[in-house]
Amino acid sequence: MEEHKSLNFIEQIIEEDLSSDKHQGRIHTRFPPEPNGYLHIGHVKAICINFETALKYGGKTNLRFDDTNPTSEKTEYVDAIKNDIKWLGFDWANEFYASDYFDQLYEFALKLIKLGKAYVDDSTAEEIAEMKGTPTEAGKNSPYRERSIEENLDLFIKMKEGAFEDGARVLRAKVDMTSPNMHMRDPVIYRIKHAHHHRTGDKWCIYPMYDFAHGQSDSIEEITHSLCSLEFRHHRPLYDWLIENLEIFPSRQIEFARMNIEYMVTSKRRLLKLVEDGVVTGWDDPRMATVSGVRRKGYPAAALRTFCEKAGVAKRENLIEYSLLESCVRDELNRTAYRAMVVMDPIKLTISNYPEGKTEIMIAENNREDESAGVREIPFSKHLWIEKEDYMENAPKKFFRLSEGKNVRLKNGYIIHCDGAIKDADGNVTEVLCTYYPDSKSGEDNSGIKAKGTLHWVSQEQAISAELRNYSLLFNDPTPTSHEDKDYTEFINPESLVIKTDAKLEPSLAKAKIGQQYQFMRKAYYTTDIDSTEDKLIFNRTVALKDSWAKKQNKK
Image (cartoon, rainbow, N blue to C red; front, side, top):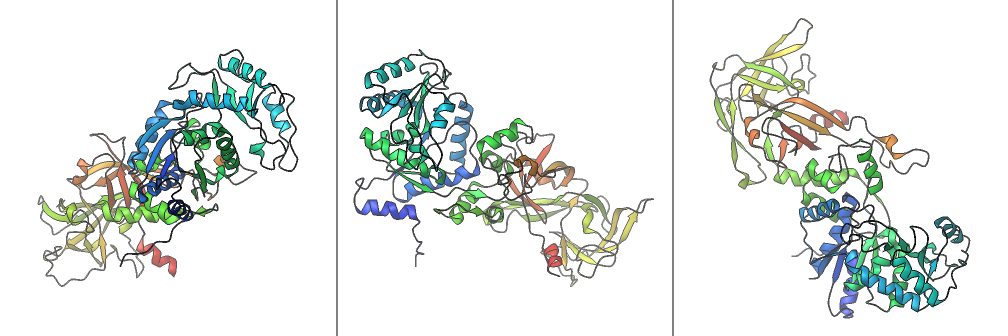
């Protein structure tokens, strides 16, 4: 029996429109980022909602770049955004730019002026802000509000022709200075900006404001459902007012709650500051909440899509637990990541009764969850590396690792018996001494010997070295931007990156490809970093594994 999933509120609206044949059965959405930075994880929700909603109903999604602010936009950001969307698993029906519509938007502005619905204002930005009043106090009309249509047309055309300096004049919609909605108090819809545009060059020196370009671009493209985040709900009355007065295609704006995640900052302005201040190495630093950052960290695209699905589509803002995101990542990697043995804090282990110079090849599955992943060969020898923490001289009763007199199994290898350890002059353990049971080999065990613990290991002679970048949360406060008396940068975690420079890896990892994801057994999930070279492998920690022994200790 097919599982029935309840509809979210956006789907309910769409199904109502379909049942009434509002758009003749057509569903068309869009994703309209401004190319002034890299996409962050909050955008992933908007991407998933727009693309997946359209797909569900056999519709289409446009990618439209809101490039109306030439001083902050770059082709670099355009390319990065397209790469991120494709990596997430989506493709757009059409690629458009708000700048494609500059001529038509200009004509729309002329129409509003001719209708007596827009006027040129000579006031300064500060004077306009003062005239707008406050949420509890009505605004005041500009002294230029009653200019004649002819004068407004003449001044606006001269604005376009470059007759005035930046900030000298603006075009405002004539709406209602007493409206309780501040966005409706004669909003600015065009400003003068003598700046080179990344696509239109120097053709324009006036540019439409977001509120003017957004709804009209939706209408030009005949977008049926304009799905955007909740901060734009106060913009919707103006969105509708402009469509109504221009008598153009009636796109419908619907708002959903943003993706707010614990310990993450998802503001382009704040993310840019982290880059510019050198807190991180760039937009794709694995500690950043950008799509390129979490991709470099090793998050699978499928995990982000699952996370958005589990977070749901809500009408009210909420704070999503970071643990839900990590759980989605861990679940996906458990299914898809190759296994490998890596010793992060190595100490020597010698099997005294194993033949000197002998190398035995052990066969290990790459991933038990995926039969198609195949197997790999792991060399085994007399001299191994193990984790320093896996040996304890005076171990507690429930320590199922190495201590004198105890047996443990070496993963995919033999059961060994700990005989003791060698110490240096300062009493530090430098080598663990063991013997092995020759008939206890994994898959061929006839020894009858029992071992409660299983350890990972790497053969010393064949081991390769690598750098491990152990990333953790960039902020140590779940809501770093919510404190009125403190700047969010005060909550930077000084231990958000800990580097281990000489980890010991099984030799199969020598062929690790950039972006390949692994489970380093008993430790964490890692991915091969883009900084890796043939001479130096670098792996980024993606998400930690649950330590079952530590978990038991916490329950005591």
